[in-house]
Length: 101
Image 1 (cartoon, rainbow, N blue to C red):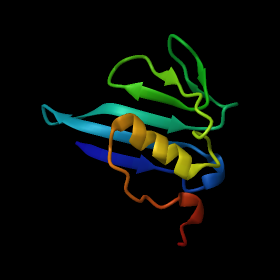
Image 2 (image 1 turned 180 degrees about the horizontal axis):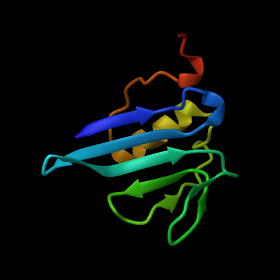
Image 3 (image 1 turned 180 degrees about the vertical axis):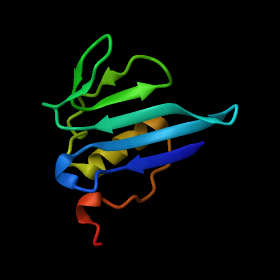
Image 4 (image 1 turned 90 degrees about the vertical axis):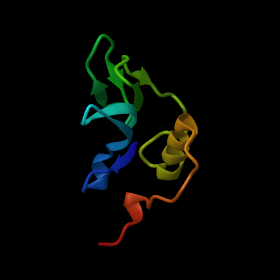
């Protein structure tokens, strides 16, 4: 298993990806992903169009996330929600809005 967290270089763009990958036949396969974006932004074009945060489970169609704490200006809330949904024991990942370069 591999956990990957991505944030844009320009945090004002707000697109956070919290992902878990599994190695299958020497290929990385997404097991779970939480995508956090503004609720007004179209973030998925599939059978259903999704605006804002959503989650992917393996190859299933993604589901919208309506939890209030999962939003662009609440890094710790989105991260906590990711840990809760994946049953991962929480650990610190620095908020990209407060990282000094």
